[in-house]
Length: 62
Image 1 (tube, rainbow, N blue to C red):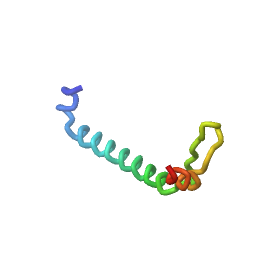
Image 2: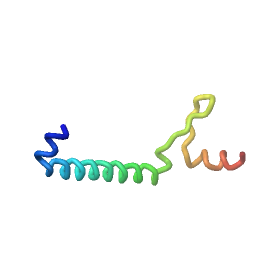
Image 3: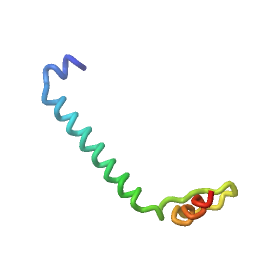
């Protein structure tokens, strides 16, 4: 693979740009999910789901 990349150096740049774009896209989606805490559910030991917004006050009492 190194020989092939040495022959076509633009491919290295293209792969790096593609990887950076993918990681940027993934990071933006992760940020969107992090900003929506109501989408997160936390299971209790009894299997009852809690919404993250209701779990925060419960966790603050510990």
